[in-house]
Image (cartoon, rainbow, N blue to C red; front, side, top):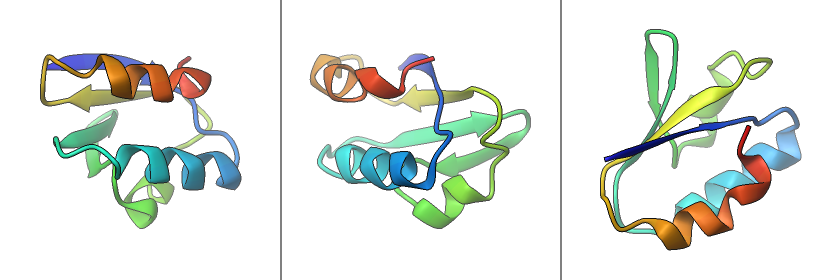
Length: 75
């Protein structure tokens, strides 16, 4: 499992982020405080406080391709 901090400040960013994450087969969650949502769910992401960085938890160790694709969103 790997964890990175991301920042999704605009609605367009959320849409792009979800489209990228949905291309990968492994499970990805977003954690903001005690709230955890599926990173592949647009509605779930909008339920989080997007004004602060969010922790992205990727449930695989071989995710360098995903990390490269989401580099613009990393905080």
